[in-house]
Length: 118
Ligand code: SF4
Image 1 (cartoon, rainbow, N blue to C red):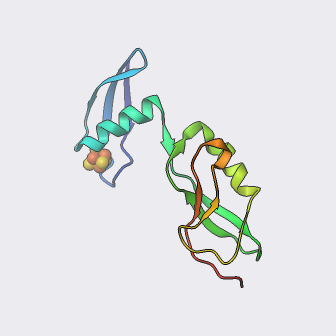
Image 2: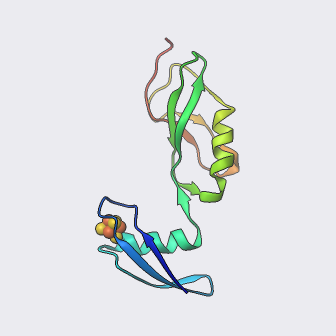
Image 3: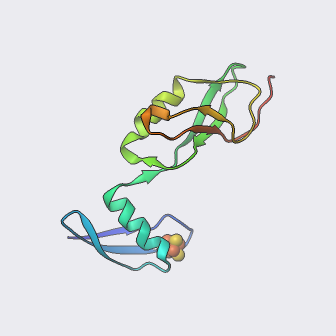
């Protein structure tokens, strides 16, 4: 089976063509660099995404947060739900862990901005 996809690793947006046999990617073409081949293999077998959203704080104003590492694509809903049900402590510094092991993924949620008590 042939699959076509666009590499999202950089603004070049290379159009990739991947050959998939038995659930495995056997050949990738159209990539300008090795990251495209790796992207196609991951995307077609175990897709992952970095999630960015906001979390409420004890002060009421939401703080931007993100996953510390990419998570499995099929866990995005659960991770966002876990973030939405949590409250970040204040003050918080950029990079501080505000939620550990989000939705059992083993990936922490970190603050994407510093915020004081106000
Ligand atoms: S294959 Fe390489 S050059 Fe092309 S979009 Fe992906 S990262 Fe960028």
